[in-house]
Image (cartoon, rainbow, N blue to C red):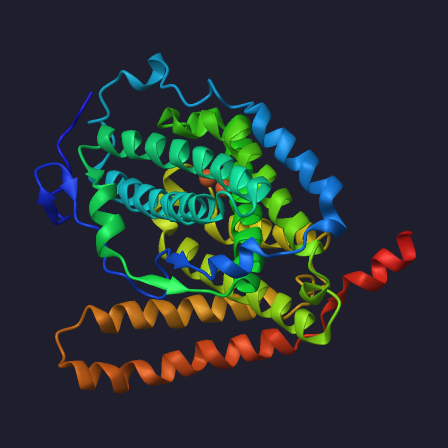
Length: 357
Ligand SMILES: [Fe+2]
Ligand SMILES: [Fe+2]
């Protein structure tokens, strides 16, 4: 049942929410060098790729994304603050699912006839992401708003990433997506009293989609020796892990209200998501971060505190150039903490692999 939206959001049309302003933290839309992707030599991981693609073809979640009777209720009892936090969470999730859909769909289209196996794989990934984004958008409609995905497609700026960066970042966003969803699901399984809305019941099978997507990108990554055998690859791996973890920390702690509304401590949740994602990445990346170092999480938290100051300054009424000088010290804090985090002695995963085999 539809209930009235909180009036604090700008609407493009009645019930259609204007997308939030794009910042460094909002999910991005990507484009890449399609010719280079078409010509990738995948022979080193052909068995692994075939087996992941067979899993995608099996389409285990074909009947999963159907709204059950639990959604047919009135949500107007949910407080205004919680609804606002929910809508922000949903918008961010829809945008990142939809961003995946657009990139995968375009890859599938451009690779058609040139690399049939990859074209099919990207089409299957796009199928899943379209379902995810659509399902979330229906959830947002329960709170009286939805996103116009066509408008979003035309009005967002697309960032160019070379295929190597796409492989690192999409691998990470799929795996962090898996951990984000499964940890919320497990929490609510143990604390059903916090289940205020039925969306999260869908997360267990949903996150298996993200896990399979991540496995596909892992096979792509391992098929390209320059992405894991070189010293540059080690630096890139650490760099992307760090940027994904800093972004995650800032966005989770910025949305502390949302997590509190479902009984989750955002600090603990952030640490759990990051530790698990870092550990999972050991299977794909040549080097990962040492999340057990005593300085690791305190430095991430310092970045989040500096980010809160930046948000505060953004909201004040000072002229732009004054704001810039007010923000400068806090931006320096974030960059300095990121540098210190980057320099913590990393974990050499290739050496660990050498021990195992
Ligand atoms: Fe997804
Ligand atoms: Fe995905």
